Amino acid sequence: MRVSRSFMPLLRETPAEAQIVSHRYMLRAGLIRQQAAGIYSWLPLGHRVLRKIEQIVREEQDRAGAIELLMPTLQPADLWRESSRYDAYGKEMLRIKDRHERDLLYGPTNEEMVTDIFRSAVRSYKDMPRILYHIQWKFRDEIRPRFGVMRGREFLMKDSYSFDVDAAGARRAYNKMFVAYLRTFARLGLKSVPMKADTGPIGGDLSHEFIVLADTGESQVYCHKDLVDMPVPENVDFDGDLEPYIKERTSLYAATDEKHDAEAFTKIPEDKRLAARGIEVGHIFYFGTKYSKPMNAKVAGPNGDDVLVEMGSYGIGVSRLLGAIIEASHDDAGIIWPESVAPYRVGLISLKPDDPKTRQVCDDLYQKLGAAGVEVLYDDTDERAGAKFSTFDLIGLPWQVIVGPRGLATNQVEIKNRKTGERQTLAPEAALNLFTRRT
Ligand code: ATP
Ligand code: MG
Image (cartoon, rainbow, N blue to C red; front, side):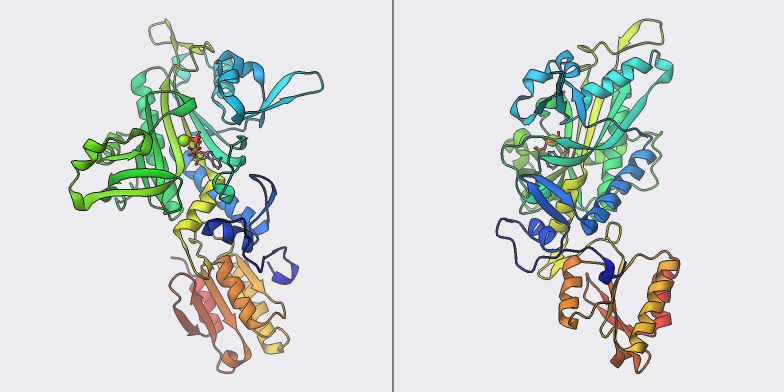
């Protein structure tokens, strides 16, 4: 993308309403625009990041054996009357009437709808187990939307639902999602810690929140320090026994405020105790027959008798993750995107677009990098060099390639790594190789 043809509305001033760094940078770098309290447009740069996060979440769900579908944002109230949650959910649910006076709602979550889909289609244990998921916008009329996309009213969630014939099967599904979540957050460049959690309006007995530690997080959490840097499971066989991965983590103390046990916490050696703030990026629940029972979701079991389906649900805050990633990775100059989610991998900065040689080298690099599949944002505008540098630091692409007449006099361009600040000078061909060689 050429900056001269792009749509990147940056803000010069720090917006007064933004209280935390991720919100400030998301507004200043033109990733989002607020349209109403807690409701945002995703501008092109932010949209690219959102799609990349979504894709990583999807890949790890698929790897764990979950199957993607797409349910609507609007749901009939009647489904929620079946589970008795229509009245129980309270003011967070946005209720709507259509022209026929029928009650609808903008889904805050999808347990009822997915249970309805499942019960209409599956009759036998032979078609189980299954995990279904979708990535869809949710609406919760939060009392205090704040911190930008961290606590929005409309937000993008990945939510999965598992269906099993018995509790042991449901536990296996829970473990799959547990491990998939560890992998997902690691690929996003985040250190996440699974912590014992409350089940809230979803209900159920077993639950973990995945927390990214950050001073600006809304949750107070307590854990054993060793959990923070515990290596992420690689080469996982999702059909095998995942229990060891879970044990390794759940045998160390980790709990959110609601589940905190001060006495158990003090049993951790003092230098290993961590009381901190965190951001909830994912939440998994096992709730058994909480929905299958009132909604009568049954299948024929192995011995011919009907059994109620055992279920769990598993959420990831896809749009909240942008905020979490920025909170975890930034400096005074701006965002530092991990390569896996950066809107573009390389920023190509032309210091003098009206110099023929500079233009020719830049155009050539832009064309060749693009042909090799490297995503490049090419600043071909006649903006001052200093302004370009600060823009590219702000938007946080992992690499900058800086090209100007002075360097080209000795056939050199400069490469800057946004994260480390390291710079190297290379011939243009060598710079090209740096980004196109296979690793
Ligand atoms: P919270 O405690 O932060 O209000 P929750 O426990 O109500 O969240 P869940 O029902 O567990 O949320 O939803 C799954 C995931 O969706 C959460 O882990 C979080 O990452 C994300 N999420 C929930 N509410 C919001 C929101 N208002 N804005 C952005 N993301 C959200
Ligand atoms: Mg939660």
